[in-house]
Each structure stands twice: as structure tokens, then as C-alpha cells.
Length: 268
Ligand code: PGA
Figure (cartoon, rainbow, N blue to C red):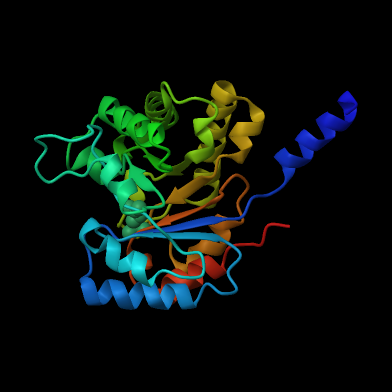
């Protein structure tokens, strides 16, 4: 192929908008019956969906969710441990998660960082453990309010992203989605404006370009999370650089979660 033709192909690929990625993070909510009902309702609503959609129930209900998931609904877990096995009461290894046929794992959620004290180093180890076994990762990053107020939010999110991806190969990036979740917007009803979110997504994208080059950077979905609701989803999901949403509270009801999914613009 002529060089000019090759570069056209690459550019077309980079410019092509990707399908939006919408993931529900249920956190520690629900019951077996709730999981069955919600996964069935969401699955039924996906027949005409034009987005990549996933849910992450509590791990105890993973199999219940998986058995009810249809129409391409992905089912993931909310956390993993970096060790293969051992004396880690209450934890799950990546092999165990793979064994249950999970589609992805969320790593570095702000509640893991700030409620359970996970460090950048641990998060990096978890990311590497998951990717080394081929388990796709949703890597969460995001600043606290004081860091935004101090103007250090971009540097902080850059450091979190770089640290988590340290040692991750270009090839492994095909299994990484990033979720920008400002801590001050999570569960507070105070969402980042599309401008604030879009600006941070640009910062993250630029960092990915620096680390992996333009093509990989533009193929990596960068989701926004933090009080995404049916009434703000359309504006956020139509913002340049926002490739999807990680949804907490509004993913616990099928009507609000499906409304967010349906607010996603179609990729051409
Ligand atoms: P929220 O949670 O949508 O309830 O703010 C988002 C998250 O924590 O992933």
C-alpha cells in the first residue's frame, strides 16, 4: 500500500467516533432478587442499543447477574487483588474473576482509594495483574475538591493515570478503558460541567498520546463518572472526548440507566 493510502486509513481510524461505553457501578447495593430483576430489565432494554453496556453488581451476585445478562450486556466486578492467591481475607484474585467469566474489572475507584486507602502503587499492581491475565480494566482516576480548588487537578489526574499505566504495554492498552471521576461529583448530585469534564478528558488523552501514540490514545475509551443522570447524560455524552459514562446511583434503576444509554449519540 502506498504510504499516503496507509496514512489515510490510520487517520480515518482515528477520526471515527467510537460507540459510547456506558457502565453501571452498583457499589454495595442490591440483593439476589434485585440483581435478577435489574439485569433482566436492562438486558431487555438493550435490543436496540447502540452503545457498549456493562454492569458491576457486588461480587456475591456476579453469577446471578451473568446468568440473566443477554443482548450483549457485559458483567464486571468492582475490584480485584493483585496477588494470585493467599492469606488475603475477603479478596478475589484476577484468576478467580476470570474463572467466573467476568468481562472486566473496575480498578482504582475513588472509594477504593479514599475509603479503603488504596495507593497509586497498589492500583498499578492491580492493573498489571488484571492485564497480564487478559482481563479488561476500567481504570478510575479523579481529583478531590481541594485539589481542584488548588488548581492541581490536572497534575494529580495525570500522575494517577501515569502511575496506574506504568509497565502497561501498547498491546495491553486495547483492554483498558479510563474513567475520569472527580471525587466531588460522585454521589453528590453535583456533576462536572461538560466543559470541565471535556477539558480533563483532553488532558488524559494527551497523556495517552505521549505514552502510546495517537492511534492507541484515540482508541482508548475515556468515560466520565460522577452524578451522571438522565437529565445531564445527553450533554455529557455529546461532549468531544467523552466516550461514555460510569454511572453509580442512576444505574440502580432500569428506567434511569436505560435513559442514560439511550441518550448516547450513535457512532456513524
Ligand atoms: P454516582 O457514582 O453516579 O452515584 O455519582 C459514580 C461512581 O462512583 O462511579
